[in-house]
Amino acid sequence: MRTSTDWPSPARSGLMGHLPRWGNDALGLVEDGGRVGKIFELQLWRKALVGYSPQWNRLILGDLAGFPSRGGLSQLSPYLRGGVVSTEAPEHRKRREALNPEFHRRAVARFGDRFADLVAKSHPSGRFDARTWSSAMVRTMLSAAFFGGSVPRSVLDDFLEPLDGTLPGPLIPRPLRMRRMSAAIDRALRKPDPDSLAPVFAVQPDPVREARVALAAAYDTTAHTLAFALWELAGCPDLLRTSPVERVVQEALRLYPAGWIGSRVAAVDTVFEGRVIPAGRLVLYSPYLTHRDPELWPDPTVFRPERFSDPVPAWGYLPFAAGERTCLGSGLATLMLGTAIAGLADCHLTRVSTRLDVRGVVTLTPAAPIMLERRTVPAGRFPGEPTRGGPS
Ligand code: HEM
Image (tube, rainbow, N blue to C red):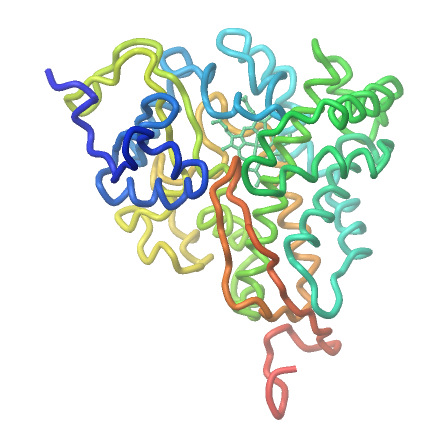
């Protein structure tokens, strides 16, 4: 039988394989890989197989025991070490069962009004960087939802800020910031605000770490998606007139899946499409490549929320991954995104930046400011509605 060494592979740079390019242009490397095959091999610090077909996604996401997370990419980030993110089967299921009810879409809906107030108080004005605005907005919402606003903002900002940068920023350990954040979370969990998620964290086995890791997992993912969504809104100012907010959110998560690549490790030799994935092999799934596959998504690079009026392809839409490790915060994330976008419905946004610079870091990251301009729309008119004599 042929082995996985037979998988196609994008061009390498000498003895270092794909590692140098992974360090400075991981997204470009993975896009090149996607052009040589639906499953391709990368020579990183260890060999990895990357795939993006629905069958591949189902294989590696649908079987937690056969493809555990331990030894995967998320463990490279000091922010994501610990809590449910680092727990394996069978304990993983117990942890999720303890957390899931409070994070369910219907349970987090209670934060909707508070988020809407916070967004209404923070409207951007004039020229602004959508990246900075989105990051601040998401920190504000997370601070309210996680701790009822009881954690000092400067501590939260210092802790989360490195996650907005490119490599190596998000991978550098920052023990002092981490300790300060942990101490502030510890105080918040001792007297948990009943209108927040703090009570559920307070009763977990390692409560401070669980809350801290969840906070990190929640932050840059949501902030970057929001920034990308604003870029698209500014490119088509009547988007919110033609498409419901939920579809705009779904489409932003399709075109810019913050969790652009994720990993598992093969526990045993596994035969897939006639070839062997050897035990111990790092296996990667890529929502980014899956969501941009023209066989699954016609005109994949076009931002078109109406495409979500049709059912999504099975195992072909995974902004929050899938299976038992599906994102804990998907309901909270879509609520934050939907509320922030709906809150800007009376803002007429236009683009000042001429291009979007997207990088694949730990999350999909806007690597340069996204300069937009906000103009106020006179009462009674919808943003994007032409005025006499040209756009307002
Ligand atoms: C747009 C925003 C978000 C995106 C795109 C996103 C994406 C993802 C993805 C793809 C995974 C699976 C990683 C893997 O195992 O391969 C994941 C896991 C996770 N996410 Fe999110 N996420 C978002 C927001 C949030 C929020 C708001 C929270 C808040 C609690 C959160 C908490 C978590 C946790 C705790 C896990 C680990 C789940 C487990 O291993 O059982 N995420 N997320």
